[in-house]
Image (cartoon, helix red, strand yellow):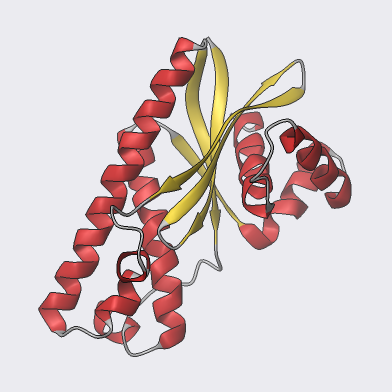
Length: 198
C-alpha cells in the first residue's frame, strides 16, 4: 500500500483536513474536508470556554469536558472513515501534521475563565487536543509543528523558498476548487512535512 498523511489546521469547532501522498517526489492531494468537531455548530459549542465563562464551578468544568469528549468522538469517527476510504484506494494513512498555536501552557480552568486571552487560547487547544487523542486512537502518528515555524521548516526541509512553496501548494489545490484557503494550504504543508519525515 502507498503511504499517505493527514494535515490539520484547527479553528473553534472545526478543522481543515487535507490528505496527501507523495509518489516519485510529486505530492498529490487525495482528499480535502472541513471537519466539524461539535454536534451543534453554534457559538455556544464552538467556543466552549467562552460559554463556560458564564457558568459556575462544576457546571463549567462538566460543560468543557462534554465538548472535549464530543470533539474527540467526532474527530475519531471522521478519521476512521477517511482511513477506510483511503484503504479502498490503496493508501495507508500512517502519520499526520497538526498545526499548533503559540504552545502556551494553560493553567487550571478557574484561572482560564478569568482571562479573555486565555479563554481564546483554551478554545483552540481543546479542539487540537481532541484531534491528538483521535489520532492516537486511530493509529495515526502526529508530528506537531508551530504554525509560525511551518514555512521556515518546510523551506529548509524541501530546499525551496516560502513563496515558492506557497505557489506550489496553491497550484496543487486548483483542481479541487473552493475552499482552498490558507487553512487547506497550511494543512497540506503540515502533512507533506510529516510524510517526508516518516
